[in-house]
Length: 167
Image 1 (tube, rainbow, N blue to C red):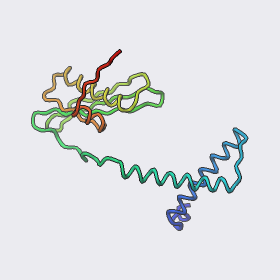
Image 2: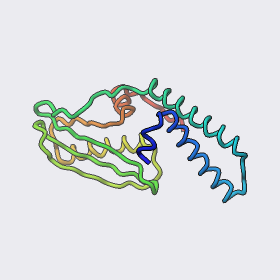
Image 3: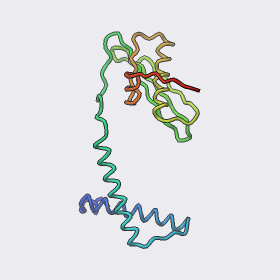
Image 4: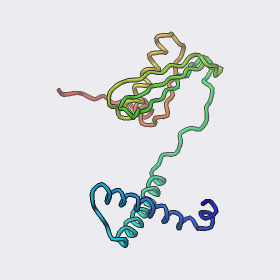
């Protein structure tokens, strides 16, 4: 199969994949719902699907923020780095993780916990950052610097606004 794919140009392979996917989708629609489209309609819809996909990928490239920083740098002298991350779990909960290093980059500790409930990714990332800060306070770590891969949390922490709840 690899040899067959290598002989085709990229556009042909993309069209072929879109058509196969759409055929599979229509097969399932026919099996489970009794729906059936004419073959010409399937071919046309597969091409439109691929065209929409390519346009959306182009928009993503044009609107994606550039990475703020690549790679890891050890903290400044006397600082403690608290790296945080979160992930949404399939069952609806979230996992929070923290790794803490000293100013020489040496490992101090790591912690993880699972939280129940339905959370948006940004909220879970904020909860992971809070978890990291709590550990820093609990273990009296010097000059804690929180690091996260969630750019929206970084922006919100750097530019705080006051929100008044009127309820």
